[in-house]
Image (cartoon, rainbow, N blue to C red):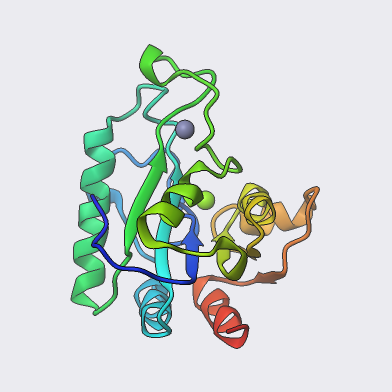
Length: 193
Ligand SMILES: [Mg+2]
Ligand SMILES: [Zn+2]
């Protein structure tokens, strides 16, 4: 989905699986999308604070042949509809379809957009004029924290999804905050504005 032509100074770069929606392994059907109970409130709070909400997601299931880009787009359309019902909005949905060990040749490569690579953040910089150094990254894996470090953003690890087990095996970089879930991450971010 192409972003609306808006500009934002600051963004929250949001991981998808395990952060916004329940981690269910490879999500191959839109009807398997399940928000956490706090997801819509958490995103609405960020919207109202004037932050861009930008989804950045590794979807190697495409490269592995488990589902297509069209399915991922359907998943995101379903998420957008559910958010809209709750008066919330994700401003852009970006994902990496690649993986070095992918089965499908057109997606089997080492790319710049697979997190912690920064290419998806750079796309948001282009599309919205965002300053990553004044922005935030939220995710349930250390690679989200690494992405935050790479672009100069503040990073929050959430304990949902894989987050609790990630917390047990500290990564090479330190998160600016480790919190229980996305609504706690939103509160933490608001306190930093
Ligand atoms: Mg995740
Ligand atoms: Zn990629």
